[in-house]
Length: 199
Image (cartoon, rainbow, N blue to C red; front, side, top):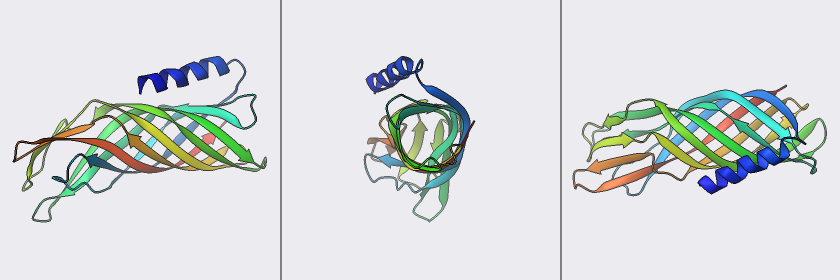
């Protein structure tokens, strides 16, 4: 994962001198959940949001470029105990995604595909979550996360981008201990619907 991030940053550094750079603001709706290594805890989707500044560059190769952002993002999960009572676990992150981007289409409307690594740092939310009436004693959240982004969308009149993104967490962001004393890890996963304005 660190190698992927370093490679992306090296790519940005090499291409920066020749790239046409644009700044913008990106925001959207997150539909997040957590994938645990066992089924002891049933994790359902929880909604949140993301927002922050971004930069985009296009390289001399036709349609090829990159984007990067610093996003305040909410992630987590919702779970039910045996009595049907819901508990929402939501944490705040600063996510830093760096994506390679390919655009094609007409000048007025272009389609884009994007993929790349991200790192995240938990800046809000409880570190320890108690789930009453569950087989799980507690869920502990970690401070660092990393993963991969896969996205697609459309760019309108060269300034507005609307997209759909899937975040595949690769690091263990949560750990839980069940009554059987087995320890299980969980990774952030989720979809996001985003819009960005570029200047």
